[in-house]
Length: 396
Image 1 (tube, rainbow, N blue to C red):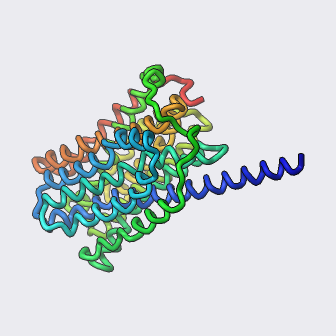
Image 2 (image 1 turned 30 degrees about the horizontal axis):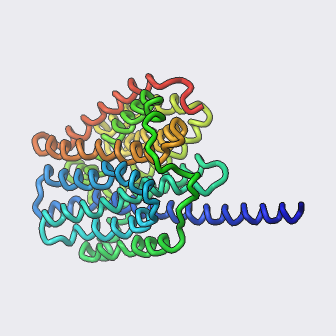
Image 3 (image 1 turned 180 degrees about the vertical axis):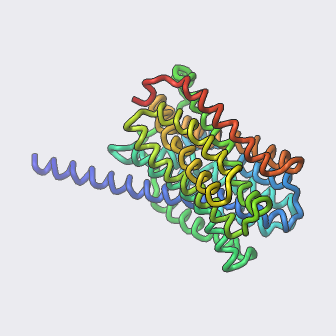
């Protein structure tokens, strides 16, 4: 009996260690992939200057990246579930870094767009598989480990403006491609160490009946992420341009303001997860939309210091629901966890970005970035009314 217990403990320890290695590598990968995908916000002024772009063209560049990196995620989720090849999450960091950053060295705007598409493929291929594998090897507290994985990506997006601003300030924009080196190294390590989880950790079939059974709350969750992303993805693309062009910020100040705003969102995800456990997901989602609107509106009518503080706190509150939405959706359809993760983490974010990033550039060309960005706050207000329709027992 003692021998059997020892063998069982040793087997558990081996599985836990393998699961933890996978979780750590994929979480670091999520950080790096989203660091690269978040670089365009601070690189936009350099693209505008190099290629002589209008704000509409700058918006097109951002929209192309969002489409390639996010809208296509359900396709890669299906492919990764079907073939279970680690190439999807393994090659993602390298492809994202080389092509997204390499676009700044492109010989023309057309080549820059093509490279953004290729870089977005790396981002899109990584997310569905990594999100379904990250916590699959952990025996318990999978929701907590999933929150770690999700927040790692949010932190990558948050630190991107400051990281790439400092890189360019210290080494020059002509060296930007060297910043892809960590992604290349991580891809090699991931391909060497990460193994597909056991078949029981996922599914190779598409269960439409399971999705249809909970279609109403899933549609509400999807639209809530869509409305939230209309603000978040557009601000990440245009806030540096807005602050430097229309609010008198230096590029340094603008980049660090964006980093502060996005970092607050990463912290908000941790806080939101804790509040959800205590008060329930629906209450957190409703109040996130309710209080983010006046806080972020204050940014547009207040002096610089108070306005930035209101923007940061508003961003923190707006992103309370980052892990909450995904975990609730996975609980609603556990047999289709990869599919719903792709829908809420990638497809909703991507469709919002594909529509609103170019549209914001178009409005800004005709009016101002101030009018374009402030007008987006109508969407969290709509999200508040929509979220009230969620069932009270959601996620409990």
